[in-house]
Image (cartoon, rainbow, N blue to C red; front, side):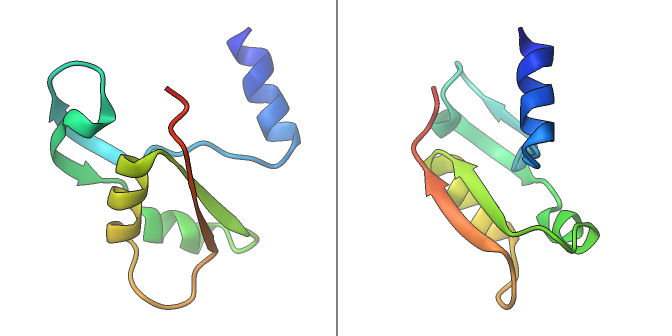
Length: 84
């Protein structure tokens, strides 16, 4: 179940973080998100000194997440296809 999948991620050293803290959308597609507020990814990175990479789940997450990050040193950024 869901709890077992979360435990497997934690055991593998993988965390989940949503790039959108708040927003509006019609329907369930991420591409329909409007008026989004990005999560504070710089704060997340600052609090995780051993963080090696951030993988974005889909193009919308990558666009929003990359835009929220300042230029400069950061973990590797990986764009993945959407899982939906």
